[in-house]
Length: 640
Ligand SMILES: Nc1ncnc2c1ncn2[C@@H]1O[C@H](COP(=O)(O)OP(=O)(O)OP(=O)(O)O)[C@@H](O)[C@H]1O
Ligand SMILES: [Mg+2]
Image (cartoon, rainbow, N blue to C red; front, side, top):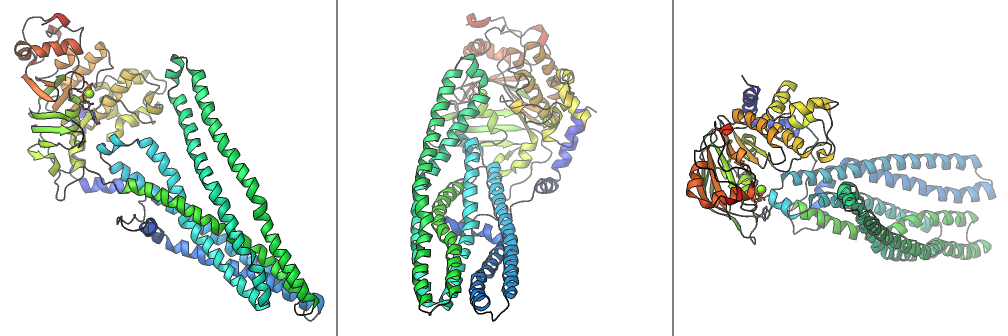
């Protein structure tokens, strides 16, 4: 039995247990614990609440512990008050009593602060993980029309900073509020010591809040701007690295450096502006509490002198004021963080609210024991509601086991036809069926596991060649991988690589040539061994000799398999039983190569354009093809 056939068996075994397949998939990583509330009428925070709720255990513990720690520490100034009055001045209580208490409280407060912070950061990162996984999972479910519209790379990098700001707000804002609420407790202590002085001490707090808020308000747009400009710089650097060949070949290094310098200048302007604002506000922010202290000293000192207040009270108030500053400063920060988080959340929801357009219909059935009968009936297709029709009134039937070559000028819609077969897009008009089932009635997973697609974009992952080939069947053993590579004409050059099948392919496979990459992508599809094969320009970057090898292999593999092959070369056409000529999205001829040459003058024209060097008559070397006809030679451009 050929390895290919064995593979096909394994594949259908996997297919007959789609549930098991699904389990394996979901088991690979812990899924997010919650999702965003889909109700778009709610505010962003309420929509995000389910995520926070999923982590409420550790989150609430963190908040409670933080509160407890603060309250414990708030006892210290009060104890200090009593220590000064009772031990230092009046000697009624031994001093070490207070010293031990203060040390103990400090320790307990510090400990609960430590645990609370630990839990807070843990919940923060769990929330971040959930948001990230949720977005990524959503992106993997999105259909191709979505990817046509958005730049996925930019989307993901933007999502990163947005996730961060939402996460920060959701976890740190409640924490700051808890700290502010501890200010109430402190105020209570101050009131218990001396009511008028408590009010005097708190006079500056609203100003601390206002100044803090205004400072953030001034700095907020600048920090936003700095972030955006840093992203610009990163983009330029990224382009310079990835496009280094283009830059060098056009000798544009200097120009690129100028562009980079300009972008860096803009970042610098942002940083200088930021420093300027900080320099202006910091003295105000730092000196306001001193005003508070001065007021406490003035009023409190007056009362001490007149014997209405103990000396310890002034010290206690002093400590309270210092403790309260930070929460009031941060209160201003929450407002800013909130605005930023709202904007970020909107952008995240924009992604999450977009429903994938190509999904399993309720009650969709699995495509089992696929024979490979593929039929387009009166299919019309456009890439979007405002875009022109790319395919019109397309009728095409690929019988089980048949190989059809699709020929046409560039832009005639060949790749579009190829993309409809694995249901990357849905037809706009008419129907597209596999084995008599409208593909919209089939589960996408089962359909796609029966359709192998080799696209002209030979994308490889940054893993070993073996893993790249085994991408669709990770459990395949090395013998199967090698057989697929042999069939794709890749085994020879892979073996010559220093590490053979274990060679790790660089980013997008840059260390390999275009033709080598194509052969690996062919091997990848052959290993899955699907009953329906779609080859779009799969051999365009491969030289004629290697192509011949692949063709020999393909010829064997295409046996009993339905194949649609987008052909640019006569040699590729020779593999096919039938040729279909596409022009502006319509089929204008359908028959064997020989028939088309005779009946359709445009055919020879198109062939002359797409493969000008070829002799239009298929030579005797390709005589084993059913498409090879005995018509006269029509040579190159002059053939009509
Ligand atoms: N993702 C897309 N969104 C919008 N329009 C598209 C998209 N892909 C292709 N088109 C348009 O559809 C038409 C057909 O494109 P298609 O890629 O099918 O041509 P093709 O026959 O494969 O050409 P080539 O031989 O150059 O590969 C073109 O006019 C193209 O601009
Ligand atoms: Mg194409």
